[in-house]
Length: 280
Image (cartoon, rainbow, N blue to C red; front, side, top):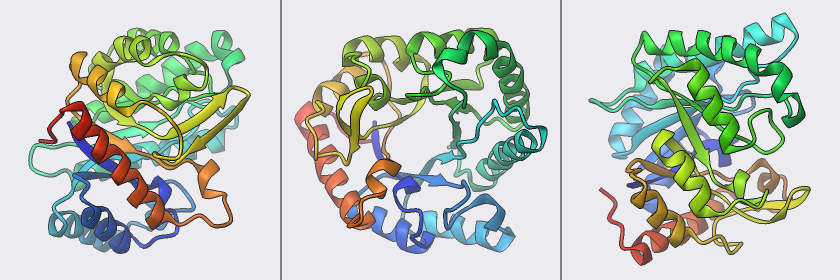
């Protein structure tokens, strides 16, 4: 396994500063966030900037593990849905442009919707996901669907059902265990269910249970990363463990994206050592 960091936690940091910091701390790779409001928003990445990002990744010896393009696939407004789908397909194109050697970054998204809507929107989500996956498959890119608290897909069972209905090797899971921890599911049951379907991950820290929960920077809570890493290895996952700093944390008036990255690295790199897992 390798250790990565998502620029999700660095929305206002210029990409050259973000990548330099991530590399300096010792991370093996990065997930690039391209949603609106970020310095690397997709619409801002012209040909010159894409070339520059490729050069920065090479200069800092960072692997691009994924592109965070989270967009609601369930909007009922045609114009909004068209824009969201265009962003996701544009992220697929970007993955191809930024691919390194034989490493193709995944494109991560959440589904949208709400848990109570699952039975009524499932068919629509399958239809729209199939459209996206068909586009991605033509370019050898994998779409990583992220189950998310408060979204239509919020349990392992629902995401597995989506995978079975879409039935494509180019649809897998972006497994963020924090969203299951806060609903009371333990490490072993969620890892056993999802590791085999996982192409990318997120980890945070967290405390409490829905609806009274809080996402934290790794190291601020008591999540057992050592047991998590051992479970992921046992169940066959060998990809990136990527840290994501929640928007909930970013809203703090004293939020420092560089301090958050440092604490995250210290916490997870130590967990790798304690778990006896090499980063290769």
